Length: 464
Image 1: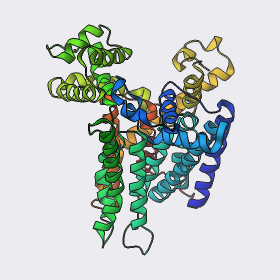
Image 2: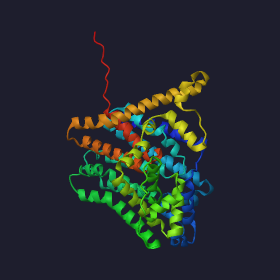
Image 3: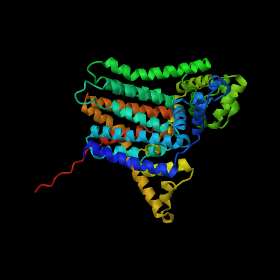
Image 4: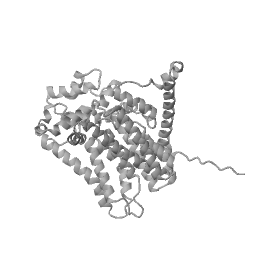
């Protein structure tokens, strides 16, 4: 089976699954969708005076969210009218299918195995990404762009080419720029994979600077223009104020586990103590409103204070912060890497708030009272959990050893750079706030590299 056939199989399966989910659930709004839709409605107004009232709101939506996804929502409303939500889902599914194809081709070329390529592609086709394609959130597009870029950076230029084409570098740069407009931390994620980008650029024997500029300039220009717009409308230069929420999440979680970093006599610490004793997520909003109402703090100032508090916690309470990260990243994440049964169950619960099945452990403890379908779910879930654990262990341990055994080869160095960047992504989100939707780009990487690192077992032909 060649690469084209393997890709056709995975894309066909992915299309069937995604169309079924789309038809069954339709476009799915969630809590965060309201913020993006509110931003989109602002963009559709004839009067843009809203951009000059930024500091009237303690948590302004145009600071918490980047303009990329709201712009797509606004354009879809103009182009598709009442069907705009379906247009967005169609766009997300199209991009997701592209990522399935690119990931399958990359694993095929890496492992020279159509079976392993198909399995890696299916981790996207029948995994949790199929659910997020139907959600009105930027995570699906962000993930699809990241997967296509990472697979490209791990690949080689076309035969006879002196390294990657400038046009390819420009497309990757534009993709990262788009990611930074979808989520403010798109730049942070890109920085984690700079070694991989460097290795990719060194494939070129000439015009390396031109290729590097094609890769970097779209990102730099996009970020600088966005920061200039923020400065123009507020008088303050910033990219996003999301830190006024996300920087406090791990600190509040640390407090729930017994380590309170808000014990000094600063305005921030006093206000935290006045607004919460339970350190729930909802209390962060109360904190923001109190800081504005009583102390006149702007959202930018709260974001800066939150960032400084997080850095201070990392310096003064590193073990507590790492412990909180350990709570975030565990078996619940690992088991979901290649687990179609879990994807179905968790996806249905995410969309409907109802459980299709009880937990697998509860099912096995009461087999006599369970239906055949429920038992089948528990078996498939368990197989998926075991497979996911094996693949994660192979990625984590076997992959770097295989790279080191192969020596100073470009492919091995690229895999090591991808491996370290992926682990850094896990650490990044675990330290701040980890949800499966944030690490969707890592799933085909872990599965694909994990499969590549597994030993090959070749059947021996019988001799007579």
